[in-house]
Length: 288
Image (cartoon, rainbow, N blue to C red; front, side, top):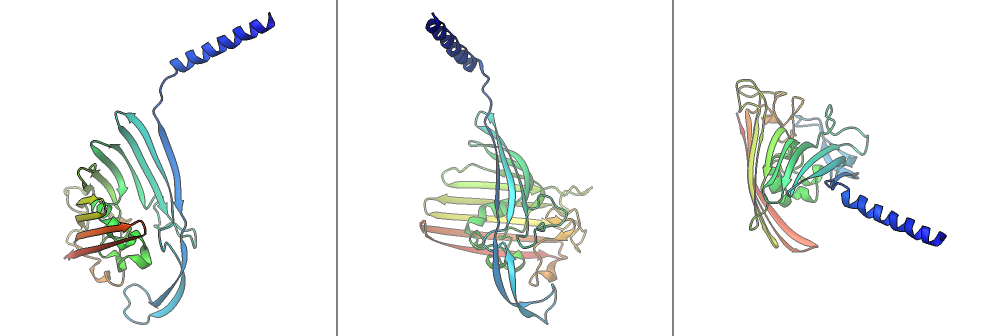
């Protein structure tokens, strides 16, 4: 009798379990990923002096953060909305592994902070602080893919192919890949009263990638919010609280330009997983 009761109870439990599973709602899949990089090295600089100085430089050994990749931590999230569409977000902050200081003062997520939706058929639309289309499709053929900052980029990031130029208030569309082609366009709203151009940044690029061959062409224009040029205004979309990014001894004389324009072509060929070759051509103009 006891054994029969146990069997009936087990059967009822199994039925209840199946019924519960059958009536349980199907929740959308979501994920949040915490990621990061800590990069430190020792470097030698043959001549070092203050920005704008043309004399008095001395050699120096330094501990340098971000040799291969900028030190950072971030959060990435995705929420399945159904029908192949997902809501996505990224929050990413850079820092110095030497001192622990933020890479950019007064910005909590200086590298990236955006939200958007993505669909495999229709593409991706994002809004926030992010890299312009020019950088996103040309960067695979840039030397900064392998060496960043102090060693891989041109001084002052003159061609915009390092990871310095990030634009605030950016609306960016990235198409899906179709027959090897991918297109992107972005516009950054400065919000200056009476002007849609002043302080804005706009960019467009197209990339072809099929098998071992890759090619990209891009254009970018960064407008100064200061009328007629001058110190970059706080409303400039690539400005960090009013300070123009990407200024060095090479570009210091152009820091008050009314606008910056960049056109670039990049290409690459992958021989195998251990060896590939890339090349880029850039034309940079500072509009007085």
